[in-house]
Length: 173
Image 1 (cartoon, rainbow, N blue to C red):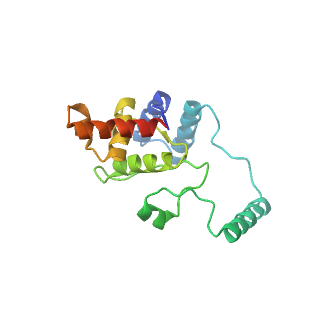
Image 2: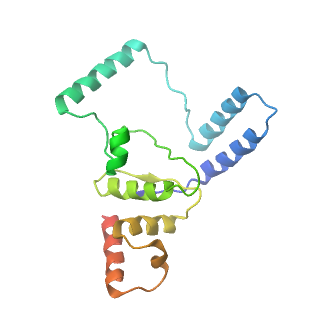
Image 3: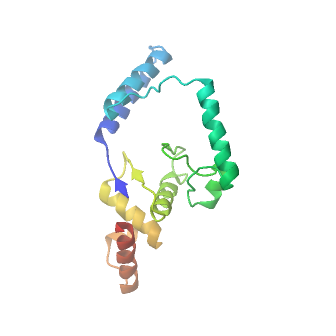
C-alpha cells in the first residue's frame, strides 16, 4: 500500500482553479492550458496515440473472448458489494476519481476501498490534497479495525489497543 502526497498536483490544481475563474477566456483554451498544467505536474503527456477502429475492435474481440472463457470481465472487484454491483469493478491500469458533494461519504468509501483492495494484494495509491500521510494511515487502520478515528489519538482499553496494533500490522503486510 503506497501513500503519496504530490505537492506538484496540488499546485497544479490551484493553478487550474485560478485559470477557470478567469471567465473571459474561451473554455477550450482553458481546457488546453489545464491539460498542459497537469502534464507538467505529472511529467508526461496526457495525449494518447491515435488508435484505429480496427485496432479497437480487435482489442474488444479479445476482451469478449476473455469474458466468455473466464465467465467474467477482466475487472478488479472493489470488495464493496454495492459498488461492484453498479460498476462491475475497476479496469486494470485505470485511474478512478471519486467526486461528489461535501459530507456524502467519499473519503470513508475511499478508505474502505483502499483497505479492501490492499488486503487482496492489489496495489493502491492514495493521493490526497486534504489529509496528511499519518492521518491517511490512521484512517485506513480505522476502517480495518472498526475503531473510530477519534480513538486513535487517545489512550483506549487494552482490547482496543491490541486491535489498533493488529490493524497496523495487517496494513504493513
